[in-house]
Every structure is written in C-alpha cells, then in structure tokens.
Image 1 (spheres, rainbow, N blue to C red):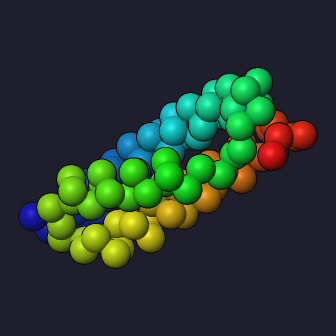
Image 2 (image 1 turned 90 degrees about the horizontal axis):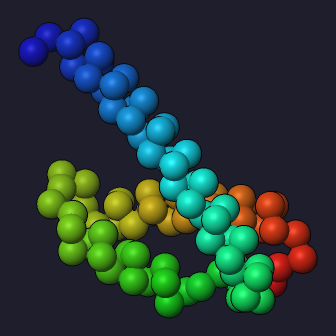
Length: 91
C-alpha cells in the first residue's frame, strides 16, 4: 500500500471513531440521567476498574495495556464531564 491509501484508511477509521465516541457519549448521558434519578454518584471507581480490566483482557496490541488504559481514561473522563454538565445537581 502507498502512503495515500494508508492515510485514506486512517481517515475512515477516524470517522468511525468520531461516530463511536459520540454514540458512547449519548449513552453516558442516558446513564447520567438514570444516576440522577437514583441519586447515584457520577464517579464510580468500581465500574471504571471493571472497564479497564475488560479492555486489557481484550487488547491484543500493538498498543500496550498502559496506552489503552490512558486512552480509555480520557474517554471516560470526558463522559463523566458530560454527565456532570447535563445532570446539574447530581453528586
């Protein structure tokens, strides 16, 4: 493959990631609404640990587990921020 073909594939994957990030964010908003109704905190360290454990088990590289966890920490942090912004008054 030449560089232009590879870059085209990367662009397509970036578009897929964008769609997936926004789908995940929409689901996080739904969870935030449920948490507010149930008076649950936005931050759930046990749930986050389960996510990290699961993704590390599923990871086959080439990114190592620490890189994958850093990426997911960022995604989860942004989701948590979105939940807080849209569910004012929650813990």
